[in-house]
Image 1 (cartoon, rainbow, N blue to C red):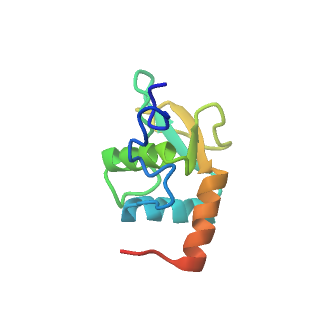
Image 2: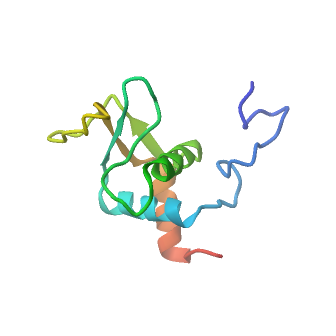
Amino acid sequence: MSDCHSFDRGCGSCSGCARELTLTQAELRMLEKLAQIPFLPIARAIDDATPIYLEDSDLSQSEYSLVLQLLEKKNLITLDFDKPLKNYTPSPAYPIHGSMALTARGQHVIELLELQGTQE
């Protein structure tokens, strides 16, 4: 196996399997948005698999893309281009659209954050 969960290599420090989870403020804000709205739209270009989130402008597109990829790697959200949201019209620059949602682990993290808060 070549992923970070390989028994012979140990953890690649993605914070996905440790008892401690490290999240940035941007990651926390995205998780909180998904806790309030279960499905949010994502888009991408035809020739690029990078997820794009266009619904907010708190961060740049590249910053949102990084946040989404990190949350997916930590198994806190799913990015699904096979399940687009109905009545959502993507930007012409990003004609392929889908949705993102919390995973069961992401929901559990949200519940723990509500109970225990965060530690700086």
